[in-house]
Length: 222
Ligand code: SAM
Image (cartoon, rainbow, N blue to C red; front, top):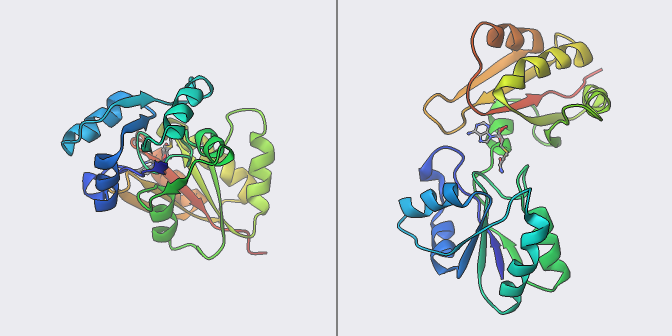
């Protein structure tokens, strides 16, 4: 059995009781970065063997993890923060388990895009999660698609690329499109900056952008 275990995105109080129980009962923990997850487990006084599973080794690591799971061991999959598989490693392993007939479950828990979307105040009945846009190939095409979407769009972005993204959104969606930048969700310096693209761009142009960021863009209305 493989259990996907979401972990806090900034506030350790966001770990669920169920996540802690599953981690305690697991035979091994599959981690994106064993050091990061080792610290999390240590904080909650949980000692488990940690296996590394990240973008650079996921194909290679897959077989040995599948072997353990097929033997009946209980594996818990975690990433550095949030829900594995959401802009994080996980998909490959989950798909392989399903193909091999290994039971897979995912616990409900922390992920950055849900609080950003909900607190943005933009329509959240229908939305598209794009994660990180590609840096080069395909970026322009995706920006055009985003600009024409009638539904809310959710993007992940790194702080040092935020201004570039906001300038591109201004160009493609227009200066008046409502957006929200959610920064440092669940952390001490959490802020939600809501306004038009031009207003939010002006706000972030005045200071060094730091921390983790989700950008929520309103759909096109006309
Ligand atoms: N698996 C994670 C999830 O479920 O949200 C996402 C991992 S992805 C590698 C990291 C990105 O998620 C960051 O660059 C940022 O866009 C977003 N993110 C993660 N934590 C955040 C936070 N506390 N506040 C705002 N955005 C966050």
